[in-house]
Length: 202
Image 1 (cartoon, rainbow, N blue to C red):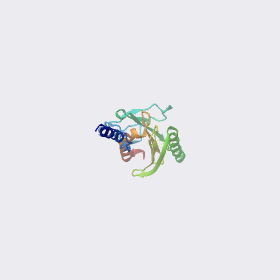
Image 2 (image 1 turned 180 degrees about the horizontal axis):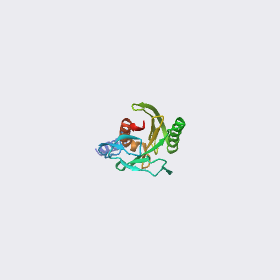
Image 3 (image 1 turned 90 degrees about the vertical axis):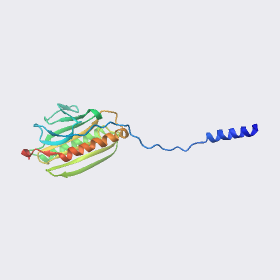
Image 4 (image 1 turned 120 degrees about the vertical axis):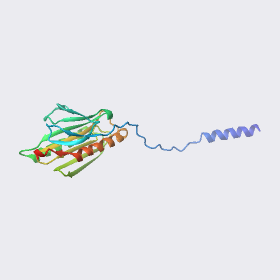
């Protein structure tokens, strides 16, 4: 009887120590409390445009941006304290002579700075588009653990160009920021689609 019990115990021990097949866990994102969306109008007398934005974004006029002195009163930041991020806007007057060259400089600057700040990028998607109200532009979506995952430039190709770049004030981590980025991009799409140049200036 004792021999049978010993064999049974040893059998159970071997069965319990048998190597288990690992089961991959589903991808989980950190829980984020997203702010409510109430859209309001952006309309400043020193800017040549207006748009709609969510009121969880807080406007702040800039005197400097990324260690560069503001070249126009219409340089500003839309801060997002609840999401630990910000969207930086810079405006350039491209009117007068050499409009095409000035616009080219804005686009090159946005592209170069995007590349400079996103050395860890694993992919990039650039998309040209045209909207009503004399608006054309380009969006940059950057994949990977990058400092700034989303940029866009809007222009009328003659007088005005606006460049916006999204930053988060945390260590870049594509997986943990994915739900926040998706949320903010919806609102930036709202900014783009509601964007209008001031009629008296076009």
